[in-house]
Image (tube, rainbow, N blue to C red; front, side):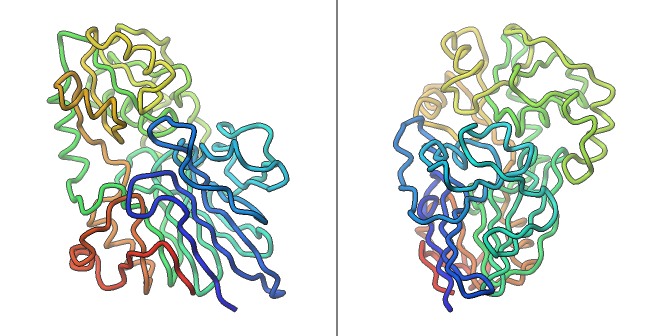
Length: 354
């Protein structure tokens, strides 16, 4: 029996993540699983894809809007599997079930393996034991000093986060760029994901003797990770967090790390109404208003790697031993260049029959 993969959103561009896997369980009964249910990155209500019918379950990789924003449209009858850390950010009307952060679970008769994706707190990659293995990375990063990336089992088919395209500049270089972008004349405002790079950057600033940082009230705080396991938080940063007290938020601090990362809402959205007060530094995805600000030199863009470089994509493809791989969340116009960098396993199609 065939397994079909349909990339409903996230193919050939940076967009909401939504992937439908239609397969069969060991009793030859049909199963339909949705991997992530993302919302619009530009702040619009239209997420750009439709919730499929007859879903058996939704599996969520992590809690960022472009992976969970579409859950508001999901019928309450469909079970949603997410880690306990991610569930804190999900709509409460849903039928929430626990997805292990590192382990196995049976979902609708399908064996699902998960592991830390190195991108955010409680975020995971997802491996389905069907069709000789389907691996979905969610968003992943192999360079995080806060969130571990666990090695996945082999998979014949890989659906990999390639948000940066064929980009191969490592985090060590990016960190120096961020130091160079900091202002001593104005507070530095950095819109960041609350459960992602916010705390990682704060701990790194602290290690650089830059102690004048604050985190938004809805960001992951040092105290939140003190009891976390080594699969959730890298031990070195966990030890560092024990030496740091949580801080009250101040909108005049030297370095302000707060959400939301696109600057639409939260502390970042509020403070961006007074742009002239701040040296604004974006480090991730740029929505239209942020692209305009950077183009007009009223904000900076300095990437902090939370997605894979080309080198790390190549390493993961080798480790997975995959025969076919679809890069996600990026343009794929020059497929020949992708194959030169990552091998002939690269496919540029939103539909797979396995």
